[in-house]
Length: 216
Image 1 (tube, helix red, strand yellow):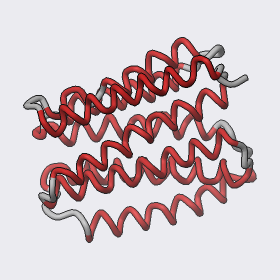
Image 2 (cartoon, rainbow, N blue to C red; image 1 turned 45 degrees about the vertical axis):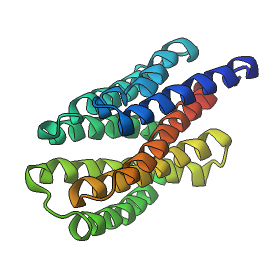
Image 3 (cartoon, rainbow, N blue to C red; image 1 turned 90 degrees about the vertical axis):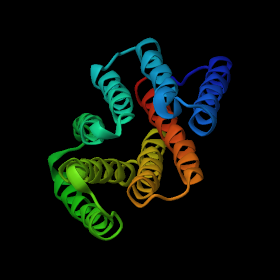
Image 4 (tube, rainbow, N blue to C red; image 1 turned 135 degrees about the horizontal axis):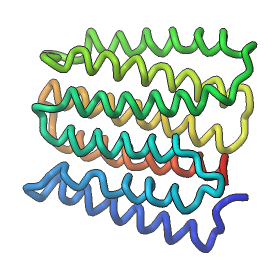
């Protein structure tokens, strides 16, 4: 049973307003990234209320994203923040792995290799001066490649709305993180960051929506 329409629309409006507030602060206020976590915090708390059969892995997924966002505000701890975002992908991978039967797991490995190669191309040729974040970026890319291969295979094998939305969510996350990484390490214009965060907030909402369609 999906979320009732009478609740879904106000929920989406409130989430969008929090996103706009965060984007305003990002561009115009001295605190910049410090309130980026607000929209995701709303999703995490809502998952406690909306998922009748509560799965701690879903809450842990959002919590890891929030911790990563809090820590990554301090650029000196950028690598540690990425480890928490990597943890969120590992949790999501563990959740997604349970969807599959053994006969499909060879196919997952095939897609994992493809997505990993694409990440390595970006890693080695598009990011200058990785510095001390080298290991954390690499682990982040591997975990992202893994969860992308799982959600992609899941959608190909069962083309239902929930699987489609979850795949769209990870695809949007790849786009937003790619833009942010290139901006941070190559000193591009601040407004690329603005666009990246719009996509980022959209991605997190799609994750939440996909979870509710699958579990509520």
